[in-house]
Image (cartoon, rainbow, N blue to C red; front, top):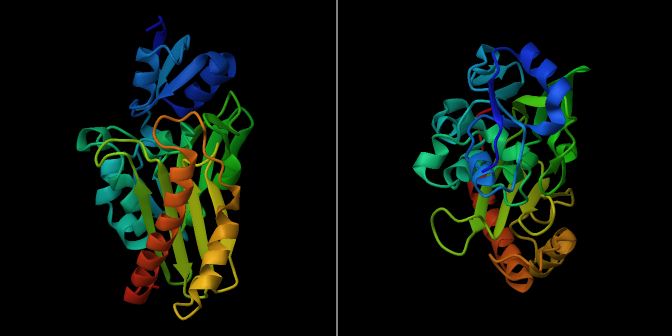
Length: 290
């Protein structure tokens, strides 16, 4: 592990000023579950570690603000799983958070950190994209709202500027009934990163959203407005053809040790049908209260 200077930020304003001066040489610490491994393996060699855990403005937790649910930067996966707002409106996000590491990891790992790490295998990314999440970032130019689909660039890279950091994630409260489910495939049950991760959301209007990850440099979101996937009486041939078009953008790495491209592509199709079936089941059970 290389040497670095530890800095404990006290306010958002102080954090922005520090990043404006040292952003390119700084890594942010919230949960630290990914960062500490990168530091230990010398995969990251920052000059500064900026700790955000003690900023009062980031201790707001999960809040309902009008027609959005706001999740602050310090909210852990365990806190997310136990939160009644998330359980009521975003069950697929509960699926994903519950799959992250062990209990000990979930007690430390934050949702915002999982997104900012920009791993293609991040379990929380597919449900957040299906639910239409926005990233709230603060920097020298003020506050910026970034649609999550524009936030991801490629593995390890986001659209954040050096002086910016994420203060929260906002999810719009569903305006129509929706059933959604997140599924994944790993080499072994437990703490392994996903070889394929996928979320499917079906609205009562017939619109179906599918987002999949770990099969390319970033998660991929596709939206079907034809109603075919949502129609349980639609021919399987039509659904299969639609799945093929949705998964056409998948490009699994040939160098990954977790699974071969052929295996990932095969499992992508299996998980697509599995998630669709579960999402439809949840929709028929009521989706959410309007």
